[in-house]
Length: 425
Length: 80
Image (cartoon, rainbow over all chains, first blue to last red):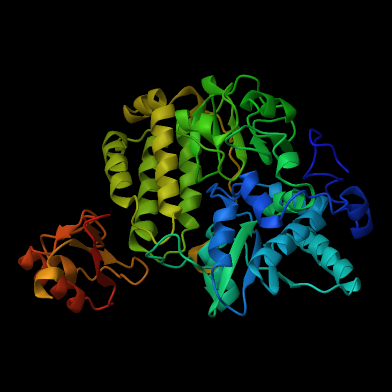
């Protein structure tokens, strides 16, 4: 059994050589939990690791209250963010911990089916999960039935309503939900959807209880979390840290630029954080003061040789292309934002007017999509406007900043696909 | 009944997936709906009092006049 203060908990094992079921059961023995499963989950204060940080026990409670014969648990390992590799690392290091967590969730709400969703563009992870599921099947034990699903990889495909839509109707398109919190359904059956990392944490809480699990992390954000660090780093890394670790220490693990210009926190739907504030603890309650959040556990480092304006332009251009094109403000608004940023990045003659349009359009677009995709982009643009205020000023007056001339880019962005080549089903 | 329904407010809500930007709502309820530069409706999220009969009537016209049936009137109780 792993000690309460030992790391790694979640990322035990080598990425790429997942623990077998026998190894996993030896390493993580069951039956140490002091109290009932749901009570321990509630006491743990676990929040969702997919980005929204919603308390998991509240979701479980909502689903427990549903009187339905069929319920589903969905493990979301879609990982739409290009900078994220955490679910991928988790599933290729210790997939059984995630599956255990899903079984605990299923037993709490009374679900008979568990669906694991992994993007099909990630064949090695699909293999690891398939193998883990086969190992479990050979046990012939009773319990919920596992299925593996492989939707196409799209940015919004991991959004919960889009994923449920795919499982229900084979289209990775977000749904309109007028009331929140809303219960998503496959057919008529209610669905509990949790991120893979959240499930792995549930697996640990289900084994050892809340007190053990809360030994690491802060009072308000207990536990450990996985962070993917990319950008200006020596080794792009996925690392497990207790929440509340200073951001600078996390960056040091990846061998990042010691004095970065800025970092993206939480992914491309997240925000920029000025490089001067890196000593802030990595937990939502402390990050909130700087207008950022843990989000999906992504840090992208931008060094001083880069240009924040053109990085923002590249990211927004790609995010605009990843829009599902269902809602007008997102389908037309995001490309318009990207165009304005393009004028600014290249410091064209239209840059000053583009700057005004950018601010106005950001206000117009916000909160008018069916999902939160446009809001994420608006937040990203606004954070860029405040963090790179000086650079935007230079670009606006037709002088590109020093970094803009360099061809080095730090935020990884997949190649843009043509609109008719995007796969949604 | 009639009196009770007048208490509280309403908001005009649009389903952005259904909406295709025909713009009829802005013609039928010009006080409630503005169009953005791409022709999609911008609707104020603050509730309008149900006692404001002309606004309610124009909201109803907009709901009925929407070719995509994307609009709904949502009642908001005073408490919230």
